[in-house]
Length: 108
Image 1 (spheres, rainbow, N blue to C red):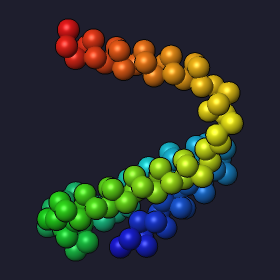
Image 2 (spheres, one colour; image 1 turned 180 degrees about the horizontal axis):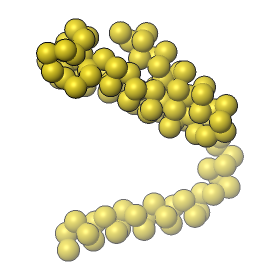
Image 3 (cartoon, rainbow, N blue to C red; image 1 turned 120 degrees about the vertical axis):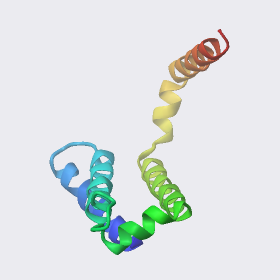
């Protein structure tokens, strides 16, 4: 099952990369296509794998965590520290503005 999910993500990512679109969109759409194929409409006609996933929220939580780890690992591979140093001041200002705005909206 895990190999099938990784294959769907890699195929989606590669297809979108060839189209010069972000790989992450391909990963998401590959996962969505796999979900629709496995779970169908969720009724009695759904494949056994879909029924298994629908009945086990712990399995879905694990899969979700694993997918997030793969995405974050991919981002980490592409991340370059010198870009962060170059944009450091503006990133700090934007981050503080976002945190302040969220705090203000939460407690206002």
